[in-house]
Image (tube, rainbow, N blue to C red; front, side):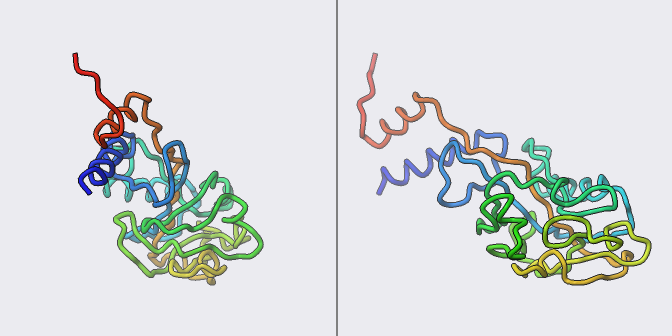
Length: 216
């Protein structure tokens, strides 16, 4: 048991030296694996701006406040569409995506935006890892493109989704006045679990009693 605890603690310490120390690593991933995280913001905003940067700044600020943004060297983008930018190019899915409870949302870009209109689970955990069922501004349809005239920044209404849904409703539930205050979805940049140097592995194995340590 003590050896197992040492191994778990040692691996945790290796991860904590990475550039995203407070971002958890989903179960089942190993050193060298890449992944992305997604959350629904714990704070709300309206959808009156036609500038995608305003939404990117909003989700980045939420991540920064939670300690999973700039302080960890991690950039976050809004899963949202305006008249000039589609969600699938603003928040690029490049690998497996997990929500902030460590649940698999999608296996990659195609799975995230495929024609089945569904995700594995909803993006219904906040930047703090707290469950939140709420309305979310998206301005998008199921494939991540803009919802025609119902993109964010429309002077009247825009598309919104339901955070707890894994059907098409996660991103396109209907339209609401852009003056309403709803959450946004955020997607992290690609994160890669650090691969320890050979010496690090040797130290871990030595701690487990599996290899000898030379004493000089």
